[in-house]
Image (tube, rainbow, N blue to C red; front, top):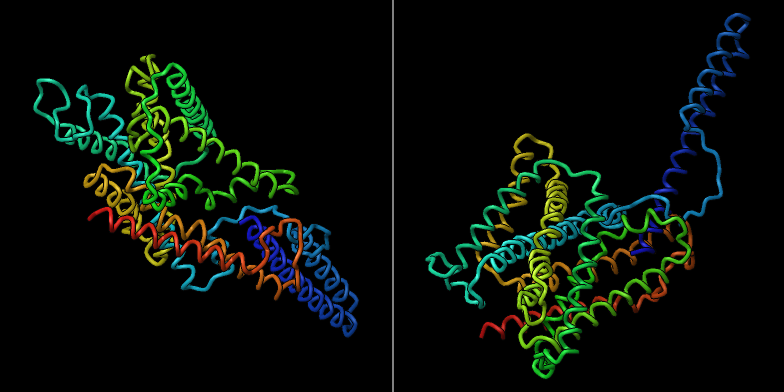
Length: 433
């Protein structure tokens, strides 16, 4: 993706230079015509007026910044933020663009459905005082209302409170991102420390052999993609970085650090808990592992704070992509009303039908997520190399060239994706039977 961003900057920079050269040529021919008129004219006053006019034209173009001045900026330097949709429009045809937006829309729908399930489910588990996973049981002792109905009440409130934000635009989310980042680090650190303390005190009930079933590896594929998915956000992450000379090493270190963090979190969970909830934070509602009441509520409500803050941003992103996919209707008065509704209704409807977060994460990551993480980046890098070669000549090596530059890596990535999707599909089919 970094190489594609670099190539996108190069192509855009090349096109601008070509337009500037065309403008410069047209200005030169215009000035020549003015000079010819001046030579042919016998009237000195007319010559003076024409000369002044030519001078004004030249100065107006210079002041507007349209005169081409050569500079030595590296063509492949990443100075402009080029989003994934823009990359697709640069290097794909109409069919490729449509397929990309369809996959992105499906992924974002899955993302919103996961959020729409996780938030009310967390609220249900925090407020209900009857333990157990059976949602048909009563939520409170002596009350007839069951957990499923409480979940749906919270889901309705969630949709009514956050749904209207889709009709507007959310800007200046810097402090919101700071808040969610701090909350995530605090929650992750608390869960790891609590699990390790429980294991050290002999309270661990985990049975690692229980999690060694090879059939679950296929499901792990989708969950892993969803956990590591950030490709559509990379342009926003890379652009603000001042020194981009070591981006490859930076991302390699970043991914290894995230992998180590996930492994640490998973291993502590496996040895600590006999059964792991699909929302891992729900495991800490038990006072055996988390004796501090404040952290029980904090971890139980952690998805409520962070996912509720992210829901409007992702929903607005989905709305904008739907408008791009159906560009003919996006700017109409009816479109401004219909697209926000089409954004919110499907994920909320899915959330009314299921409470299984694990299935939603696996499905979203395994299919739409796999195409965004594997298929489209590999195809983008293939077509961007072809286009930069046509525009700029053979550019095999530049500072942002991928270390996996051999064509066989592109083939391998797509074959790997197909095999994994097939295994996940087989897992879901056999799981039902």
